[in-house]
Length: 257
Length: 257
Image 1 (cartoon, rainbow over the protein chains, first blue to last red):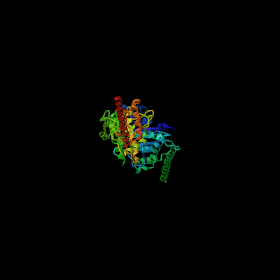
Image 2 (image 1 turned 90 degrees about the vertical axis):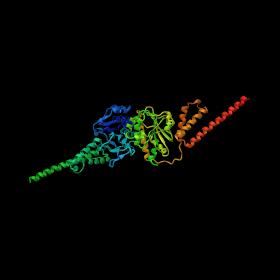
Image 3 (image 1 turned 60 degrees about the vertical axis):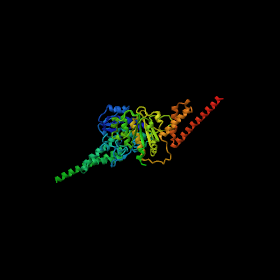
Image 4 (image 1 turned 180 degrees about the vertical axis):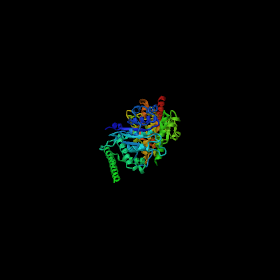
């Protein structure tokens, strides 16, 4: 496994970018550091001459960019995602520095696709988008001026990734991490069952799902574990169905008596 | 000595920048990382609305930027300069990575002004400009695409500097490093004397001065040592003058006889 293969497994995902110049500058930043896979979620203007101008020779990255209409589409097949945040939140999902996070991203990239996720120029990523990541990364900035340009953030992250790749030794990985869509399938299933059993009647569903996402983000479930978790959900539903059936039978008995 | 003081001693020097947007983007990059002193050597357009637009809130950096007409003016008072190079040259001046160079820059910045020197968009720094630095820094890039934007290079360097500052412990420095103008004064003196003694008749002066610059860049002379070296040069000139005087006296003796 050589460095090029690792970097070839890394996607840069830009969500809802407003200024096409930033897309071009991000492509240039990526290419200088040996990255090539750009994914764009609903860019406001793309393709665009300003993107081409700012790419300054990285036009192959733009030409091969994958334009997506949702984050799930952009993360299809991905097993590990780091999401950028400008804020240091008081939440339980891990917030790491680029230097801490990049060796882990590379480790995962040795085997399967991984992603670095960047938000919009004005407001960054939404909570929902960050909920799709396993790790949040904050680039430490001047507390009085943390306004890092999105392409500059791509430059810093790509640089750190490239620096980490210089002296990277892959660990033997015995686990088979679940893919983005397997994990999302689990969350959709979980949410459905939690509605089914009436768990959400006294709770705010979206806030609670965010907390559950964070818990599982820390756990990094394997594909096999996702199957087990979904098995539990299925059995729960079946058990409920049996209970209901029995109740309705008994109820009809009662009525018969 | 706290981190802010160290970063307050760091100048970012941009030489002959063509595009004012890059000046603005560099100012923004600096400010996000806690740097504030921008020096511009003969910028093509400055001030300029494009610079303001790209600064995106770092307009105080632009307003306080020092516009210089020469590199010596920009490095006045500086005791340690790192210069960017895109090429890994086969020359004897040290070429370091940002991660290697930034702790040393900070160490020097604990006491006196230091500089990071960036060249033009098209051709980088001249050999003459690089000769003014003690250390060359190369940001490792994709060998097939090393075209790092100048503001992106400022971002990476400022980020590395800020990261180095996080866990920086100043060493006690007993030496008093010579300032830029003391070192330049020595080189001017040396060159003059080397002409005087006829050393350059069989050598290429500018190439030879570059080699001497590299040697002294590695040595990092103290102010006191510069005084000693210049003392030697002065004595050399005086000795030569005495020899010439004696020769002309003897020669006139010969003519008289």
